[in-house]
Amino acid sequence: MDRPKLSVVIPAYNEETRLGPTLEKLAEFFKQVPYEVEIIVVDDGSSDGTFELARSFEPKFANMRTIKNEHNMGKGGAVKRGMISANGEFRLFYDADGSTPIEEIENAWRYLDSGYDAVIGSRALDPSKLEVPQPFLRRFAGMVFRWMVWILVVPGFRDTQCGFKVFSARATEAIFRRQRLTGFGFDVELLFLARKLGFKVKEMPVVWRDSAFSTVKLPRDAIRMFREILSIRWNQLLGRYRF
Image (cartoon, rainbow, N blue to C red; front, side, top):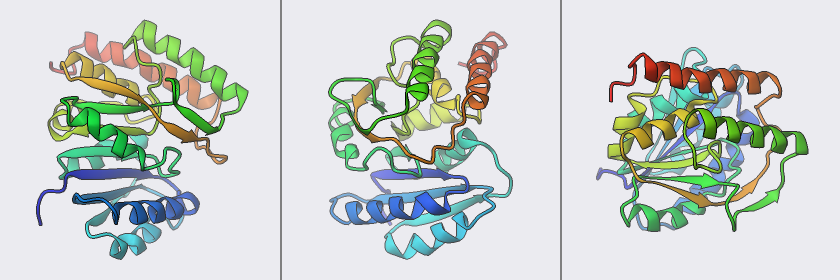
């Protein structure tokens, strides 16, 4: 089989309810595209039927595989394993709830084809469209988090947390093999590494629908993310990224 143009990596932890509809939409969409696609679901040690559900979808795709982590590694750990295992010329990691429609990949191609090494979805740029907006508390927490990221780690990005990010194979190998964080702060670390390594990153407005069953819990996860943001600077000071 020829090398796929695109790999789609979906981290999934206890996603038995939300993963099925997302995979159905991917199967329908990718039937219509003129390029080869690889689908990778990384089951991150789920205790429900996520793994079995993902395996049941494999016949619906020309190229799909399911990876199982025996123990929960965290979203960042699951994404890292999937992205490094992928074979595509470009590699998209994509949330299991499908909050960003997969059709947005067609908008990303014009940036990737013009020389960008990565394209990240953004809910904060005009004319992004939030079809189902987030609750006020989550919006406020996101604003505070964005200011922390700008001050402490990597200024300039309006939205670091959208679960729609696509990287070239070259950028993937350089960035994800240096990735150290496995929790929700890993997105920020990826952008920090991309900038330090000199890769061109485009922030692109996307359509986005808030999930009623988000796995992010405030304030517990907000505290964890703050600690992870600080650890990026600590890792840099200790020379752990080996630029």
